[in-house]
Image (tube, rainbow, N blue to C red; front, side, top):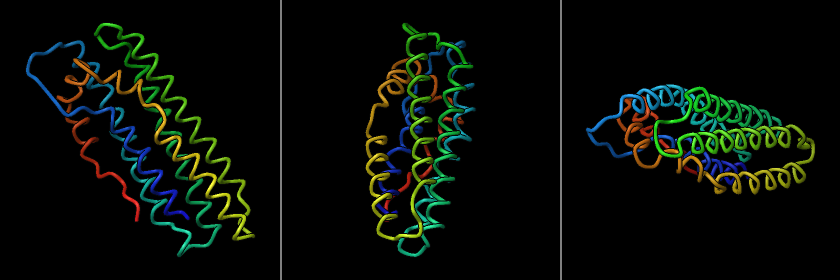
Length: 191
């Protein structure tokens, strides 16, 4: 059952890596480049935290672990993800609006979305904490519900993040070494 959780989770982790773009050009905007560097430098350690949480959930499958071990691992992973998305939202907020058309709206929308994702992971942590580990069937049913919620979370809107990183913002982010290394992080795969 935790394999389904891990599969759903791997889709969500990709979301943070959406904050790094793939294309680049040489014409620059120093203000935008400075903004991108500030955001990318803050995102990189959070992307690693999300990746580690992903890996922990995949490692701790219900096939070879006790329900209590799975619950503890999943709860910690969801807390780590919640903290990471909140930190990314804070970094985008702190960086200010990017120096592009509608930059303030893009920033506000992205921060709101990141904070929402952080709250969703915090909610999943509470759900995991409340699972009955004494009854294997109830535990498995509880994990199914969490996997369903996680699947919805991983496919729900990262539109604001895509909107934030399009155009010149994406180009500026693509120039940053820290965004390149964040996007190069291996994505999680279900086993």
